[in-house]
Length: 231
Image (cartoon, rainbow, N blue to C red; front, top):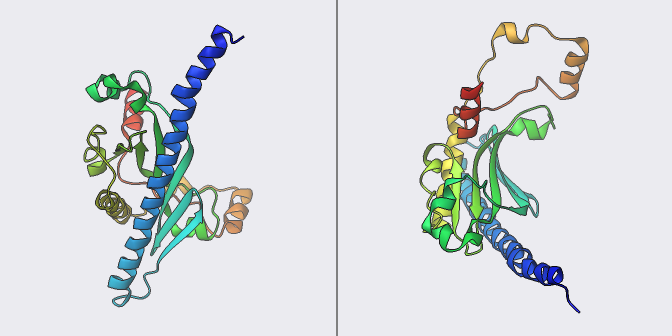
């Protein structure tokens, strides 16, 4: 005889387990579309700019099922898909929207990340180098999505209730991400900050083919700003 708890387990399977599998399938499908558009963008850039300056290397590469990259000159745009499904913090403003109030399960999302690294960080395997998160795409069970990021990517795709994935929108997200990369330059650190170095640190730098380098974009995510303001 089935117990009350066993019945609850079956109900939770229906509400949560099957839900998360459906979102995973949606996220995988959209990630494949994103990689396709990233590859197309690479082909267009190589065709349109390669004849002008062949020294600017433009190359698309799929690393594995969950990650792909676009190299353009000294920059690397990396897209990756998380294999798990998430929900928002209980205090998040999304729970105040009619869209989520009508169906709370619409707040569960898969996540696709867009990062910027220096191409040399990948080439020389400089594990101490830092990259920057440009944006993340959140996809729910109905294939609606929203984007969290900075600049235009912080407000253009916030309305998850009305945002459905299209090739045009994915291309726009990719192009805006590339522009973020190009607008970010490496800054020379203050001399006093780097003048003292141990022999071990110097040997580590040589082993890593150079000084540890990070490409920090010219903005902070909201969470970082709030954290800094509270210090």
